[in-house]
Image (cartoon, rainbow, N blue to C red):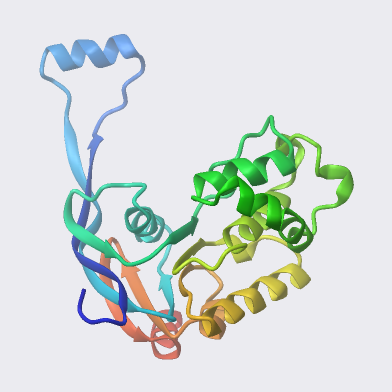
Amino acid sequence: MKNSTTVLEVSNVTMKYRLATEKIDSMKHYFVKKIKGKLKYEDFLALNNVNFSVNKGEVFGIIGRNGAGKSTLLKVISGILKPTSGEVHRKGTIAPLIELGAGFNGDLSGIENVYLNGMLMGYSKKFLHEHIKEILEFSEIESKFLHTPLKNYSSGMKARLGFSIATAVKPEILILDEVLSVGDFKFKEKSENKIKSMMKEGTTVLFVSHSIKQIENLCNRVIWLDNGTIRQVGNANDICKLYKNS
């Protein structure tokens, strides 16, 4: 870590995938090609030598067009993906809210998923039991849906429930990927206020959004990814202005 206030350090991170360069119609076709040594691949760099650090209490935005590497970077930081090379150093507890429904079971009810998802995030059953009312109230899930299988929930309902679980405790690092883009205006406003209150209490937030307005409103600094590489990093308003004019 660079200094005592640094809670996240990404050092020379590269994520490389091997992609087939021709269409494979069946498993038989695949194995025949593989045995004959005729499978052709090309390397795809989702992230290419990415370096930055984040300090305690910052709201750090990650912007870029589709396919720039934003979600891949968040998964590497969260530990979901292991980079091809490079290292990620984290300090403190981390709560990733990266994909809608990640860690949820569609056959279980909303309440059951609070316990399942919460324990996957490292919360104890006792903690969840003590905070279940608070989590459900913040999510604004109607009582008639609480015992309904999650597969019957809308994407917005799942996002609200996931956000409520992730923010029930104050993690040192909270990771959000497009979560605040789902839901009605009032819930978006409430979620932004929740993040701002967590900021005041010292939580560090990594935030991906296609809403540049949200990035400008919430973030201190921003990293701009372009085809897996860092194009710019710095003050949120400055970088967002450059991005909008690109």
